[in-house]
Image (cartoon, rainbow, N blue to C red; front, side, top):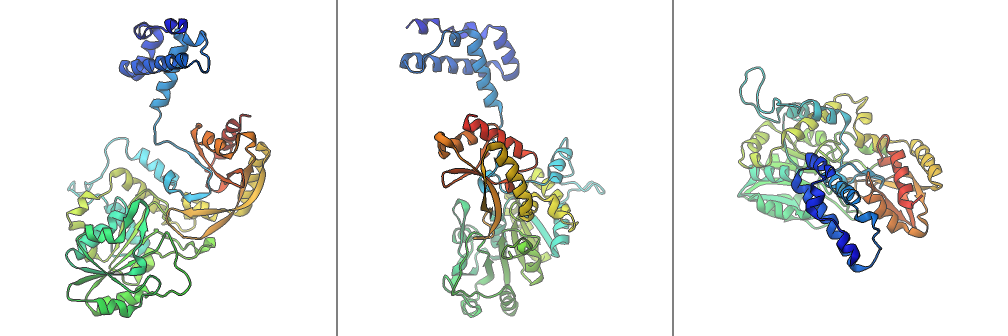
Length: 457
């Protein structure tokens, strides 16, 4: 118990110059909490008799140093940068799309003070906040009109509420999808005030199924892209052109929920083509919805493009204000969309596209350099697009396969994740794998250093 008596009093520690210095940076209340926490930890350690406590650890400088470390850790942002070495390009847990440099620069440059969020600089009158993004979207998609909300789930709900509240919406049974966070199409229909009418079967739905289901209460035909799973084999469903043709014949509208958000044809990367909003608009959909933070490669956003009348109905709906984007989303989205105006450089300036098109030779070169530094092997593997896009479609890659030794792969994975910066990797066949495809400029060396630390080298 002599060690317990040697623990200094909280009050005496707070009277020291070191504590006063910490208080200037963190405030006296937080310093007090940190000091008490360190003392409580030492007291419990002494009482348990485990992991012997040295007399040096009970000295005021040592206790205050530990309190300073606690305060420093607590002051770091919880939402911080990590190194994504998993090979999943659109990693939902790690923030999906990496923002282009142009978007990051715009976020800093255009938000140092006020900005032209809802004011027209020429007339000084109030204006729509998403007008700048809307003009760019109209240009890159060919749509007569466009608007932006905070995510694609909100876009879908708003479109349904604006075009079909109190009415029937016909959708194929095979398209009643669920995406992340238990977002289910039937639930969205219900919340938007529509009555869902499902037609066809899980694997086969024909245009005749839609036509037979139309009643005087029908307002909308809906197509939902199965962006996070695939149905293959004995399958059939009508094309968007067929749905549009039927809708025009029966004086209805068509909503095309694409979700994945491709503005470029991803088939050029060896991936099965994803629906593109420009094609949807050209084929006559009244409204098309896509995500901003998937294949588009921008910030989280829900993009609605389509006819002038249908977009106007969405903008006038009361729900629109509840789901509108903030200025940070709009600044980042506008900067990202501007990159698409130059088709010759967009694949190099939008990280999502750059990672998808990255040559295997470049990945192998980086993997070999990292493997040499870590005394590891280079394996053939596959990267994933992720983010609920291109289901079952992977890209060939090269990974660094690190032998975790006696520590074991699970322990090394945890050590990597808890390091600074955190590194997220994957385990296969007892090895810890690092995929250079999803590691950004300058992160290879950081990942090597983090791996060495995790291995105890």
